[in-house]
Structures are given as C-alpha cells and as structure tokens.
Image 1 (spheres, rainbow, N blue to C red):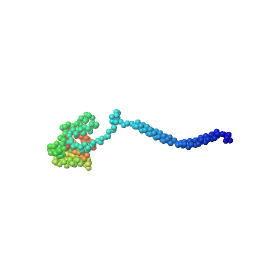
Image 2: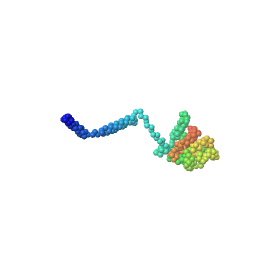
Image 3: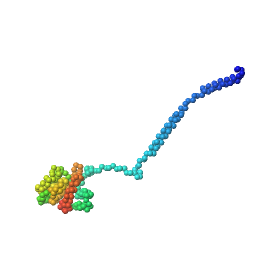
Image 4: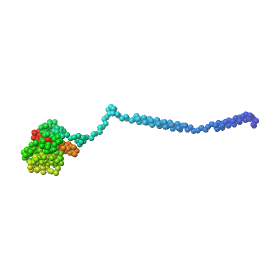
Length: 291
C-alpha cells in the first residue's frame, strides 16, 4: 500500500509533520497575550481629570456667585449706622474744665428753656427780667457772709425795720437740707441779731414751720424750693416783706451738679419763681442775687 501511495504520501506526510512542527514552534514562539492593563489606568486618569475639572468649574461658579462688597466710593451706598456716642454728663464736662461763676444771663437762659414748650411767645416775653432786677453775682471769691455784706450794705437798719410776721426780708434758696444747715452756719458773721429759720422738708412738717413763722418775726429764711413753695401755697409764708432772693447758684454736689441741674429741684425752683417772685422782681420789689 505504501508503494501505491508513492513518494507523494511521504512528501505529504513530511509536509504535514513540518507544518505541525512549525505551528507548534509558532505557538511556542508567540508570546502569550497579557491582559491590557493600560485600559484601567487610562480610565482612572480620565476620571481624576474629570473630577479636577468639575471642582475647578465649581470654584469658578462660586467665585462668580460671590457678591463683591461695596466700597466707600460706590455710588448709592447706604450710610453705615453710626455708633451712638455716650452723652456727656455734667460731671464729665466739669471734671475737665473749671466751673465758671453764674451770671444773670444763666438764670434767664434756664427760665427760657424751661418755659419754651409751656408758654406762648408773648408769655415768654413776660418772663424776661431786666438787669436792674439782679444784684451783683458772686465771683467765687466770697463766703456767704461777705457776699451778703456786699449786696446788703444796710442790713442792720433793714432788720430793725422788719416787724412783719409770717414773712422774711431775705430768702436764701439751696438744693438740700444738708446744704441749708451749712449756709446757716456761714451766716454767723452777717446776721447779727436777725432770726434765721430753716425751711426744708426733712424731719419737719409744714404745719410746724407755719406755726414758727406765725409765732414771731423771722428775718432770714434758708431752705429748699420745694418746701418754700409749699409754705407759700398754704399761706404760711408771705412775700410781702421780701426784698432779697439769693440763689445758691454756684455750689455743686458730689456729682458736680448745681441746684438747677437736678430735675426735681429745678421743677420746684421754677414753681417758686411762678408763685409771685418773678412779678415782684418786675415791680422792683425783689432783687435776685446769684451766690
């Protein structure tokens, strides 16, 4: 049978063997295909690039959304609310400056400001006092006795002529009961034989003071505007014999407040002026002095 196939069989068989061997060698020589590892890093890289771009875009959007603050030069800028400055008190002002002695214009200004919203223009004109209504003011060098000796040089004669009960010739107005006692002590060198009565509300009833005024002749009254006004209202104190009204104007308390700087005292003081003293000053019956 081999002869029948002849040489062609051997040749064909050899070729087939060779081709099989070549195929085996080619398979052996051909490198095994490794999995494509580059695809995953490429995907990762593309993801990171996308996230970076997304973050950058987000930042840009945030920057665009931020509203720029207006500067001082911007037009139509609403003014910033100003901080309320603490109002300076009388103590703050006077602690940095020396107190000045009072003058008639000071009293006139206080009266005008107080009645500015309580009286008409015509009525306010009636409240103005002439310079002739005032005694010379204390220049802060006098004691009470030396000041009264200056403004009342004929005091000894005046006190002898005064015989009217429930009235005084000299009325001294101050801000408190303690100040009243201090001023009475300072009157020793001036008063002579004149009788002095303290007129304040502390520990003393109005009725008791009315009885004291009716009991004998009183030359000098020293007290607070509130109690003096109450005595005038009850007709316990008369202004008929009054010649001098001295205001304890320049004295200041621990807070450096004058008599007219304390709201309660100021109210009583204005009431006292309205009780007939302003009219008596205009009629030239009473003189006002600022001590």
